[in-house]
Length: 590
Image (cartoon, rainbow, N blue to C red; front, side, top):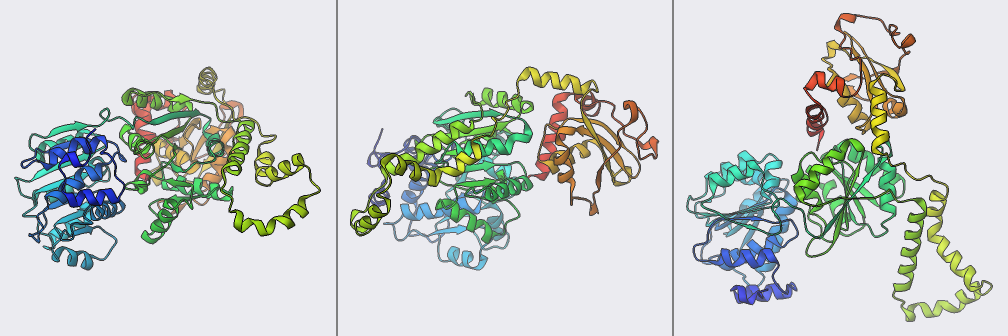
């Protein structure tokens, strides 16, 4: 491996990175820095995970090549979020600590536009910006990009995922045609490839690791449970890792709120990050998480974009994302800078095909484990406590004056009694909670298929519900299934017959989830109309008329559950899953 000195960087930059304790360049820096330092560099597409040193890979060369005699924008860095934009600007200022004439400005929404305009007018040569605010300033005539030598697109795939395609293209159109473009991304989806083809000139591709793959030092673990047991499984997984410091990813903002509130009520050091938070609330949560006053951050993918935190031990997928790229980004937040990390998936058997798809595309296998038992958790917590005691630093000078009274107070105890009492102070709550708790049932493939067959044949144990919504509310079967999934936070509830009448409807659902369905619909609205859900009388003999009798002609009655119903609506099993679960969830995502 080359040293930073061998890469040809300016001595002032070498002095700055020495103070930052940079030792040897990381692989992405070793490849990218010499290419960008060339007098006439090629455009570059760099595919590498977050946490691999990308900021220094493009930041050090542009600091080196900035002309300090010119007071105009020479290098433009575009990032998807405020947090990443600020972090890049801060890192560049550190790299330029001994280049006092270099001015760097961060341009992002949610902060004073006048102050940002002032920094640009003071002669900023390097701008780190988010697409929305930068495009706004361009349209106002406050930013001139006529002299830009290079544009750096950082986490470019995230920018497209967040819907910045139009802003990004508008910005690139205002820059000189002969400028360089350096694109940094974890993955290379087709929409990003199309932007590269349009705005880049014969780019050279540099891949660190396999293309579209996760970080090499991340272990992938899956736990298969019933959907109703997901939260219990989450608690056990967290309890079995006493040093956990990670992010729990949920699909929707409501689920994020629910999971975080349950964790906090159960005494876990957790909080939520979602789109309903104000900027000040978001910053307060992030500050607590970065300083480890929070051990668990429960977040949606959108809310967590741009969040850059080092040393995360675990990523926990409470819900699997729809796209491989999103899973890659999630798992890439741990195992950074050469450290190891763990990406955990809590899944039900209906999601197993997603795990298989991820395995094939990532080229990595999930290790499927049983949910930790109460005994295992207690053992891990106990020895974690003992390890802390064994390794704690003792300030003898401070403690010494108190020891005589402590010895006197405890002199009646023998060694065994003292150790047992000491351990019990911290350990009793785990012993009490887990001592008689049963292991979580792990569903087997054979029993799952047997259950599917029985419910499809009409022999399942269903509860029948009355709902005060119908054809006049534009209620559709797929929409009703979506409401059940979203309001309960579960996606494997068996649905039986659905009848949509003129002013109300009936549906059947697995009786196992009766409480969850009743509670889930409480207080909910559809188009500002209060939703009322009640348990209806079952049909006599399985074929009698319902208790509430009306307008049978408008019925959308579905006579069977499972894929026979789904096929009629959407063509086949796979298409049903995509349209009813995945597309709907995208709309409800943060």
